[in-house]
Image (cartoon, rainbow, N blue to C red; front, side, top):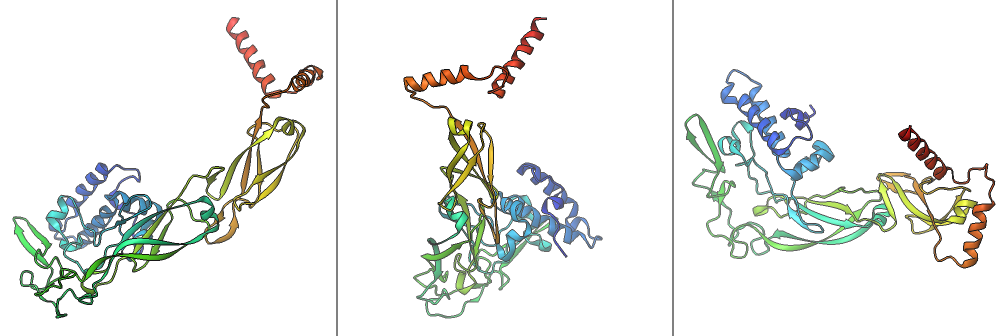
Length: 382
């Protein structure tokens, strides 16, 4: 059965503010809490679905990923961290709730994820800036990510002598402790074993019992042709190492495309403003324009071309991700007025201005504009 849209679950609009989402969540959480609906078999499922939706939408990065990719953004344990441009950040492992309901309900009736620690490594985010040419053609590059790796001294066990962890005496192996406070049962991560359910009597001196140490990781990344701003690349198992031999998290690379000096991109299409000499625009001709491949192509300019006229070059635009198709390129004409004229050139232009047929409109735009001005002034003076 497919998941419902998270905004629909909360009864909120997609553009709702953080405060609006929080109010909607609290109202429905009180309405569907299982303790308030002992006779409703659906209350627990609705409460769990509500918590899952709010856990994503309350976090700006998770929400942005969900708005772009939907539920697919969180397959295989993806989180939603944020990091500086050109760097990495920790998505955080496990997740959880940060408001009143997390403190009161924990993972009661499946409402949260605290206390379910498995030691899985945190997901990491790496922000990468690429050029428009790289987005068009794709590229293979190497990145260095500050991360963690299994401790070699204890082989990832966390124990100095390699002994197996023993059951935690505080939570008796459950990884969680409960406390009754009036109407509510509060469940928290065990403070002794940090939710692992087991403790190490003699921790490894190198890793402090974590089974992992900080270590930079060098990775080869392939960027496919046709990627767009915000495209996400997932490298499974390349995130933080897990605690005491647990699985590693994933690395998510978010792409940002740098502005180009000549081209503006709109989806698969490319726009380029090209200056055209006045004589070429008036008489017609051909010009050479650059393309995203780094080559030049010839464009025919018809007589009478005006600034703002567009010329389409079919299939000369951007690559389309996972498709052999390409977008189009649009040349935007920008007729250039000549400067630094010689006396003879000025003389010729004056002759040109007076040599035309008075009954022929050589400048339809300006003539039409001033005709409208005259009509306007006539209406104002009548």
